[in-house]
Image (cartoon, rainbow, N blue to C red; front, side, top):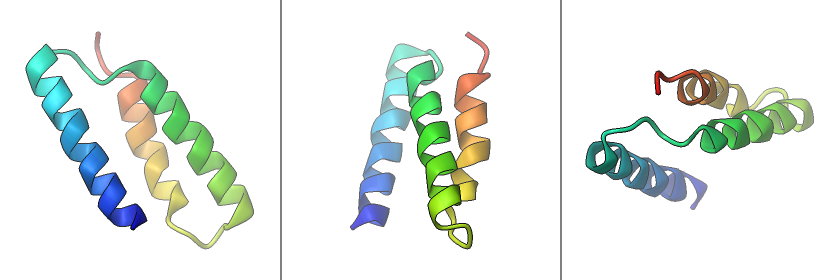
Length: 63
């Protein structure tokens, strides 16, 4: 179920970016970064670390 939610969230975010012609809101990147950091601490051998590059891309996107 989590995978389906992440795919749905990605489609919604992609639609927002195309419609508004702006990068994703910066707070989404901070949420991704926080959740992935906590996930990496709790379950180090998981895929939470894969969210860190995406979070940084969202945070540092040109405005």
